[in-house]
Amino acid sequence: QAHLVESGGGLVQAGGSLRLSCVVSGSIFSILTVGWYRQAPGKERELVALITSGGTTNYTDSVKGRFTISRDNAKNTVYLQMNSLKPEDTAAYYCNALVRGITTGVQFYWGQGTQVTVSS
Image 1 (cartoon, rainbow, N blue to C red):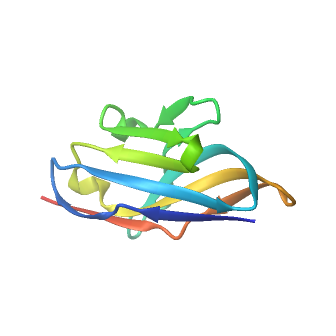
Image 2: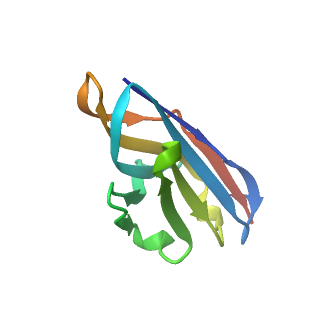
């Protein structure tokens, strides 16, 4: 079984930057695709960015050019660098990972989320 822990959220002024981290731990064989999602109050959870095991990345249009997803396989960690933050980026951010466990096969896991608040 895998465990995901996000960190790095906080309060920042518009135009500022934050870097979120998602650490994957547990009885894992490999980490496949990892995505960052966000959910604002009253809105559905949306995919912000994802990165495959091969390093291919994809972003939702609203964050292209401002957010960068990356991974450090040696540390089992995925990052989301967020620059030029806007008030509309305010949301709880969640990490989702497709993980091949040592005994559990391939499964999706979610982290507990980290809050990002951007003030205007």
